[in-house]
Image 1 (tube, each protein chain N blue to C red):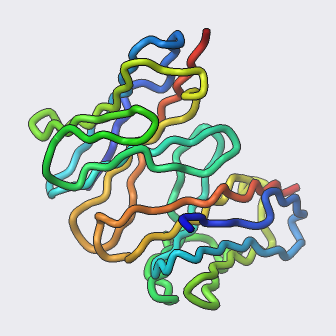
Image 2 (tube, each protein chain N blue to C red):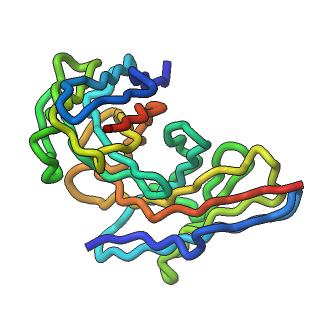
Image 3 (cartoon, chains in turn purple, cyan):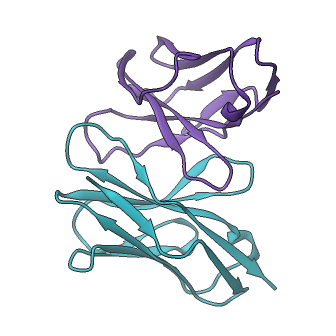
Amino acid sequence: DTEVTQTPKHLVMGMTNKKSLKCEQHMGHRAMYWYKQKAKKPPELMFVYSYEKLSINESVPSRFSPECPNSSLLNLHLHALQPEDSALYLCASSQEWRGPAYEQFFGPGTRLTVL
Amino acid sequence: AQSVTQLDSQVPVFEEAPVELRCNYSSSVSVYLFWYVQYPNQGLQLLLKYLSGSTLVKGINGFEAEFNKSQTSFHLRKPSVHISDTAEYFCAVSVNQAGTALIFGKGTTLSVSS
């Protein structure tokens, strides 16, 4: 199983809502990532978890709160978002965090629209 | 600092024609190079990667790329494209140091028409 799953596929939320994005992998990978991708742009790294601990936070606003409850799951909690946060949110995983050779497997993404 | 430049933002080609998508990188240390494809409304899929060894790398769907250290390039090629190859293609670099953070180029839109 080389699949990363993400739910929901689409999400529309107001600026006062609280919602969560979910990512799951069963490949035994110990590193998981959140990326943000705006239309016609490359993905931008937001967070990296390694062995369920936050390793990198790319100066992401606190209205985005990541959580790694176990080695297979990665959540992204959303609160008080702005319309400019509308984007495709991609989750990825790799065997390890340290070791550039490890391929990252990407999920299909969650298309987020903030009204 | 490392960077990736994809020289063409859009590449239109006819079906069964050859195609080359160009990628140049900038790094003062050893790098690992990747090409990803993104079909509309989907995530990214790895096409191929260069880690070490042979400079000609073969990937999925008939794509190949050649690592050229002297020209700091990693161009993607396919001898005959199909309509189904229409997608966004991203070149990415990962540095040979701590972490596997990928630095992506801005992407090239390949449009294949009949």
